[in-house]
Length: 67
Image 1 (cartoon, one colour):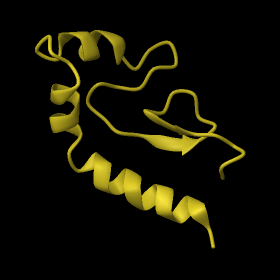
Image 2 (cartoon, rainbow, N blue to C red):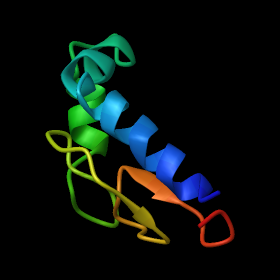
Image 3 (cartoon, one colour):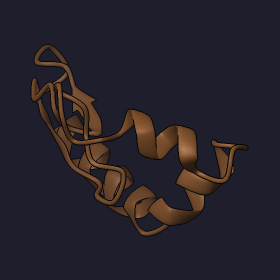
Image 4 (cartoon, rainbow, N blue to C red):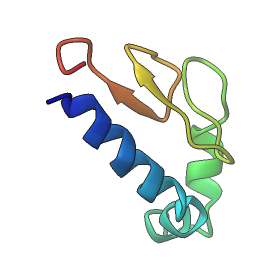
């Protein structure tokens, strides 16, 4: 079986609740996550969920050896 398929399905489920997760993991009114997740310097954007194999700017990074 292709394990990547299951990872992609999990990412899809997680992405549905992205705003809720961003808020839950930053107790500074989302200011810390917004500062860190600027979309610059190989960080992902605060507003978007992205994923990819060996993509350093993705919010969810899948290592090559997993894919």
